[in-house]
Length: 461
Image (cartoon, rainbow, N blue to C red; front, side, top):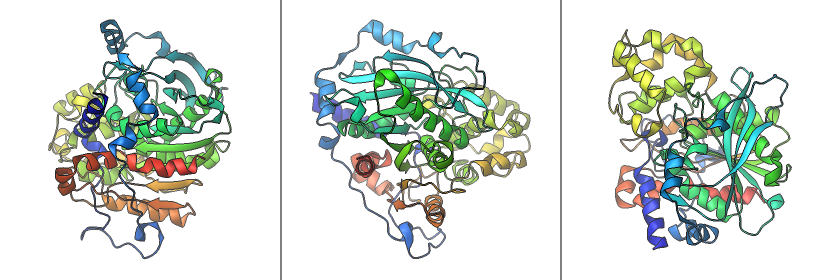
């Protein structure tokens, strides 16, 4: 029965993938439309990564969470689904003197997911200080989860995990969906297999909400400069949390997918100067937007039009000069008002194939609107090079109708980082329509980055 539940969960995870997660599908070879890649380097020598079998994901520690866990009570489920008014998210006033990563509030919580309370997972939600795009002090929340497997917490490595955190509304982020709220969020479904493998390896895992999960203001989750700092400061907060007992000098890994891949990429770039005390050994980036302008041009009018529009709205909180509402039609403003309050599922699926120019009063393509260019430029990955090793595992070719992020963008990023001295491993996955039809498990498991966890494990010893 447990194996059946595990198989259903893994298959459902594939079905729940939001189009914004699907970078450009697969095959490690460039398409005829791609720019030529110079010989040498990681791009010319892609590394194949094996898809972990289902038994490797649901084995060891993870099986105990099923066997010793239990179905939640009706009262627990109802309480989890109604987080509004939770005083944990009330923000204290900041003096400006608080160091990034300072823990403002924390509490032990019970993991509750899709009506089930897994056993043997120690969890805390935290509120901590971070910095905005403009380096102003601000607040984020996040959740720290630690497998209770008999090891000392002082001996564990830490993975700072930026989920496919693409929602603009309140109570849509990791501290919600791991404690019973928003159980259908695609960010949580996509994390199931990598998280299981990380727990099996004994890692503590810290997921940032990229802002205060309970804040009613639109969340700036797509601003990479902010997301990267929130990720690094979340790691700092987790290591400083006394009840957790982690070693502040423990090896740290960065892992990010889709919207979270943007944050992880910026975290890797920022870490040498912003958080040099963190012993970051490696960073995994999966299916991330490398170039916002390129993403807008490709995703506009596709199955992911709703996610492209949300992407714009998720930049604006940190780039108010975009003045998006001033440029929208009445219909566009009405949609924007709804999107700013919603979780990604199901809201952002509501506009497939809608050309975004129809929402703008002058009919302009949002990729070309002058007031948006500064935000696009500020969120271009690759301007500085990370010090830690990096694995890029986005789809290898643009051969799926769900391809929204050009495969060439990831190859260009690998080349830029290598030129800056970063050790880069390029491991494109096969996300093609053919593979989706013939090997749905392998297609989805790789799309969510499970095949990269062993690479990260090897660097966290």
